[in-house]
Length: 196
Image (cartoon, rainbow, N blue to C red):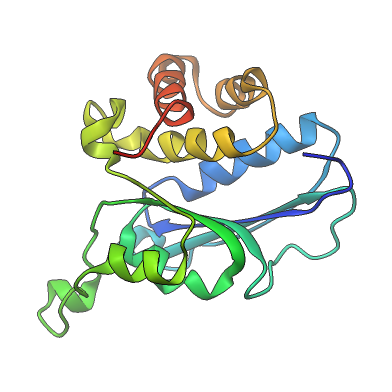
């Protein structure tokens, strides 16, 4: 990534999936490269499994912490319905990185609504550049679901022009030492991920 470029990243998930940590890791890498970074988090009902979003904007000069609808370069979604919910933020040339995981919202759990069908197909119809990962099956996240966020960060890293060592350093700086090994493995799984 050239310093003059601007990149908007929108991270979506539900409470407890690590959207805020993912935003911190991405921001740290960009700051290490001398970029201006703006970060905005919304985690109102995070404790109850509600929607959580993080905007990460990087470039030579960033003025607003919030990305505009239709301008996001990367939509990083830790749950498929959250990808569909926020798809309007994606630019026409943008890329969706989505975990196949389903996390049923409260109206579905209480039987008031049904979980939408064919969510991944709907995402692909609206966003041709879509990478789908079943992180809980295809990566180290099957050992510990808490590293799913870092798997998706690894996939994002494979699409950005920052050295892998910068990402690894940011992950280590964001987590206690006892969590380094599994998160670095999760990052490598994402970095090397190829959709089946």
